[in-house]
Image (cartoon, rainbow, N blue to C red; front, side, top):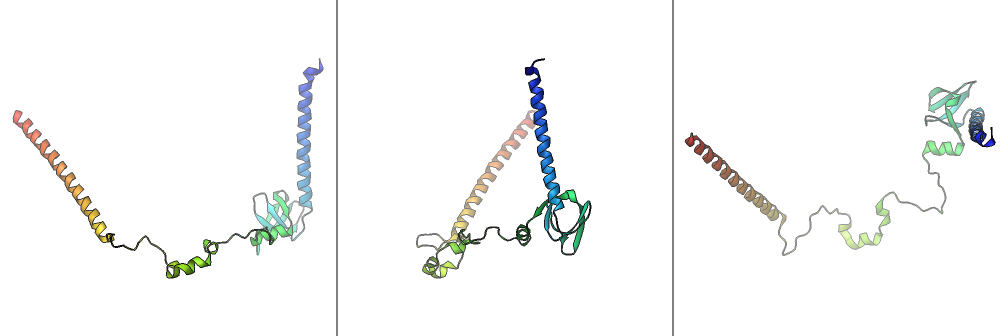
Amino acid sequence: MSIMTLLPFIVLIGAMFLMTRSAKKKQQAAQQMRNEMQPGTGVRTIGGMYATVKEIHEETVLLEVAPGVHAIYAKNAIGAVLADEEYNRILDGADPITGEDNPVVPDDVSSLTVADEATEKGEKAGKIDLGKAEAGDDAEPAADKAKDAEADKADKADKADESVAKDDAAKDDKKAGDADAK
């Protein structure tokens, strides 16, 4: 056999060796991480639950998932052992970015507006516009506009009723003509 026919098999065996080797390294690193756990450290389970280690046994770990609530997990269920700072940040909900150089994002829009604008508008600054505009001399009151709109609707309805009535009359005449023909 020539080397060219054996080359694909050699490459395949080499790729399998490299893949199993990297998987073994990952497993050994995870096992070492789990063995280095100490009572009182924060952990994240593979399910995403954060807890504090209370006791460590041969194959299991006692975790405190909430104050006074304990659960027993297999050591293999521990996904990550967290540093104290990170664990406290996650539990307290604190912002991981601390420092004065970072921009401050306000919680509401009111802090973005200039205070002078509110004083210029006077009393209008505190009021909410609900769509009622002040009427000028040539503007119609809203009540008149509403009455005109209702009148237009009534006219359209009357015209529709008249056309329906004409259609009904035509049908009745046709039926009467058919009855006379028989």
